Length: 269
Image 1 (cartoon, one colour):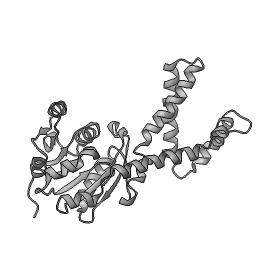
Image 2 (cartoon, helix red, strand yellow):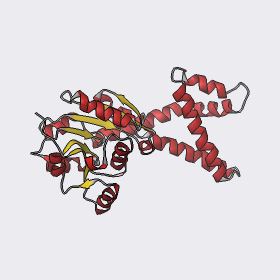
Image 3 (spheres, one colour):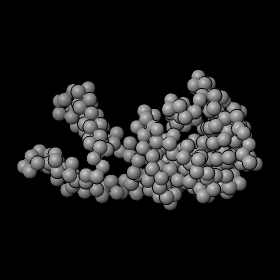
């Protein structure tokens, strides 16, 4: 029989992503502020949580005692310390956004507690996130559905096999930084050619937004079709695409992804 808990969701760690998820849960009316509690050792973070109307608790174990869903929102480097501090208090359900840390690793430390792993990305802060989820076999359907719908309300959510959670980092977890870097490179080049940065940035950002929306609204159309629409024969764009292909951009992306995934394996458990 499930024991009634004072809070529906408790966060252990409340950095940028943890705070974005907590705020999103309230903004989308999945939770009321009084249903959220937090433990974080940072005085600055605790003060921010109080301003948000969340209850601040004194330890990780207190969160596990008082919250139904316990979200681990810490870095992989301190997960062992957090799990050690939780020993002896088995959460009803664990939601982990810790990169690379497996369901089994968490369950071994927490007496086989039900676990949901999530890999969200930073655009979740503006309700345009992408989140990959997987769950343990003993996770209840209603708990998984609540978490799935919560993340889905802040963007797009998909369920994937756990053995692909490291690989999916290179699909949506790290790729916002890839996009920002690509935008930065184009912007720097535009400025070097005498275009004012303000105008170039606005035009460039809107182009990425528009191109992304075209892909989202035509998901059954091959991406190559959109490339061909812009690359008319004898035109300008085809020259640029030919140069990117000559430089083997596909291989560069593959190698970058490999480095990203390998690091996830190194820091993971």
